[in-house]
Image (cartoon, rainbow, N blue to C red; front, side):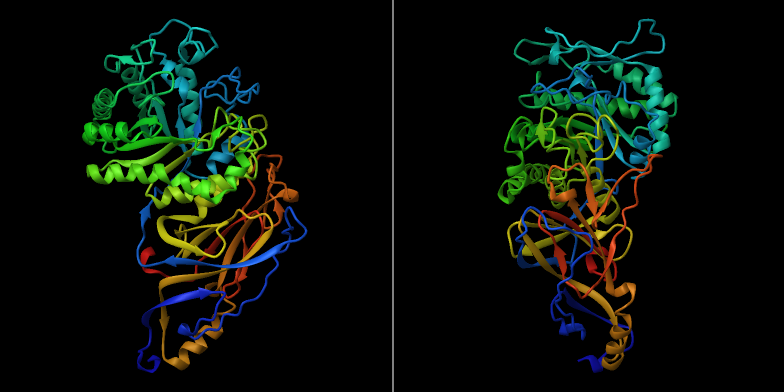
Length: 552
């Protein structure tokens, strides 16, 4: 057949890494590769297994936002405590130190990073007006206030400081508005009357007049369905969302590109979300849900849940359900995860801020993307026990680097992926972000088994000439970039799943004295070698030298 091909003709093949691939006349030999610096984890007796990742390159199955990675900033004051632990420190939007170089560099490294400003206390927040003479006070604990705190006030001077910082760090801001403004909340938590938008309008106009760019305005926090502390019916929430949409259209009338309208920022409830989407009509651009599927931070079994593939599989349900609602409604509304910290009530120290949490976090990112979720906002950038940054030192926790690698490597187009072998291996694949080819994410939940992984990619287009020329071409390119791949192996320091220090290809990732985020450098591996995934490790595999239909 090859003798009938003309020069530079193309054909569709299946490329398999780590197996014999006679289809393209290239013998790929299975060998065991030990990656320098990687240590055995948990047990000195490491077992071995084999598996195969199958990637369908025919067409993509989802399209995420270019800036899919998002993080939150919250309003909680230092007095916020859970289970006897007070983990928020000075991480509030009110008192976060914006002059810390690490904070600036951590955000700038994404260029851009979406930042969602909100949380429970946003529905107790008022906004200072230019003619206000009264002092603007922050939240304080109280025994008789909604959510256990007094009303708080965002001063215009602080809003100025924040926006200057966001502009310099290239953050894209989503601001959560007070949905309970000037409304009565009854003893049973039900809310009376429509949303009063007067405070929001004044605040929005000030923001526009100052030239501050806001990517989106979100209405309310966890007030949908049963709600947390208060609840609004779907019919009324839809009317409130239409009011917000009209307000955005009015205030941004002179702007060609207007901020998106988001809501409800709550926990998924099928009946409530269905009615809300239906009655919001075209006023709602983004429907946002919150995810804390690991339970309370006090739970002593969080790590067991994180490392249980069956438990992780259950996390797909809310993504699937939201997409079903959107498809049936035939709306243009898209889905985001507006807040996800895994374990509610501030997470759990030594779990949600350590290496082990990257198994849950990256699996969530991969799963959300599979179901066409456009953006995923992590609770939090800083604050509580689940911050991407340490609350006290601002230094990155392991999940920060996991998020940054995802952002740099995983492109918008999501590919159908399956893994054949151990059920303890999780796999996801996207078209690569900054090159041709694909990036594969492998997550090994097994603490005692090293897995040798092959990759098969369907519908790869390669250039070939005559049979003789094809052999010469492949032989000549074995040592070139086209026939190598890049690997990023993530492990915990000393094999300790509760470590706050992440190793990339065996090297410790640390911020230097000037607050510079370290470079995240891969190792280069021959394409014909199998991928070796260590126990309790995560691997990003970037394969730039192949071209598939789904990525063109």
